[in-house]
Length: 201
Image (tube, rainbow, N blue to C red; front, side, top):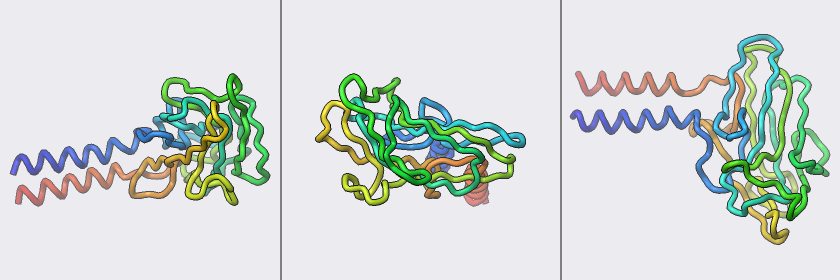
């Protein structure tokens, strides 16, 4: 009985800790609130709080990025949003949240800082700590290169393209980053209580 409880506790603990971790997969694109790509959720504490988010690729198998595509869909209100592409990248897409960015190869390509390559930075303001915002990272609409998700072109070989895995901080949800959205820690704690009650009774 004790062994069963230990195993269940380990599973539930892993589920809770996964909420705050970055993506461990190769070529993982996600939006984070730190440049190390480990914080996909943010909670504001006051009115009109300034926020900064970072679109990143972690564990880039090609070692550098010469161009990239994706769409960022925002569900909620970021006030005065402004995107800046890293490395002086030129975004030729027209439309909110659309990115078809050329950077360049060789010495112009984006390279990792640790395991993470920064693609773009978002700045803006959040009205209050009750404002919930969800971000979705998706395939660039009408892409002729990628079919199922965002991706990038190798910085060392323009003929090499890589479709990215998209990071989801909470497995039971479909968004990729969030501001002020309640996570499932409470559900994990409640479930653990139910498990203990069930095995003790």
